Image (cartoon, rainbow, N blue to C red):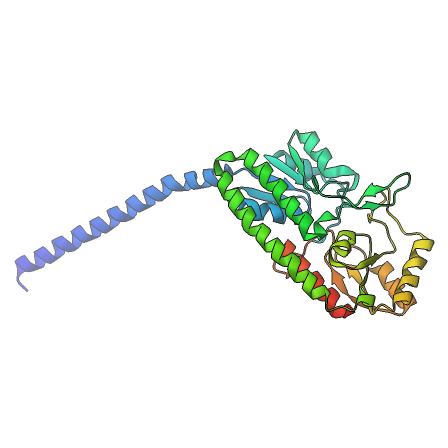
Length: 318
């Protein structure tokens, strides 16, 4: 290679390196400009703060990534017994919209009080549902576990859809589209549950659980509910076990010769296990009730928890 050729190679190599370095610098500069904008976009998303895991799942199905959905309760926590923590007001204060179940599922109305304390708007998902009544001290109470009917779950979703459209009308078509797809999935789930329950002999369709959480489920899908405790696991009106109610539950188990009874993932199982021993019946498994399952479990979504509950019930009672 001649000296002039060597010089030409070195010169062009140097130019190539300079060009590459300039490209890297330019790329880094663009990323430096875009990163704050990306972070700002994430931070500026509207925030929805929900009381329970079911309500939070419905909200996520409607808003997708367009809004950030947070939940006060973690998987497995009982909304009847929950007591407000110092950080809850801080969490709710970040909300553009609060969402609760309603009908006193949140013991002593803790979610509504947090929203009022921080001046945040709140929507109750049970609005528009036809309530079942449960016994109270002085008068009948509205059973708050309405989501266990897929028909009522659809009302929850519509209430959330309408609230987020009011909050962010610019993306209304997105929210309607997501909600429409999810409502189709709920209709499919409803039909599937009816088919699965038909595998249980009619005389075995008695559901005994820790507390009165499954009245809507039983009404919608043709079972009878029998529980030793009222609609709440806490100390509100309608809660608590009595010797009479405990004995009625045992008598019902023996009368119907029930194969199994069930504990709940968010309720202490001790009482149900004692009743099972006394009645001579097996524990059929754990059911998701007032809370969905933890992340990465089969019950981490509403559809997942309903599916797993139905499979557990059918396998134990058929």
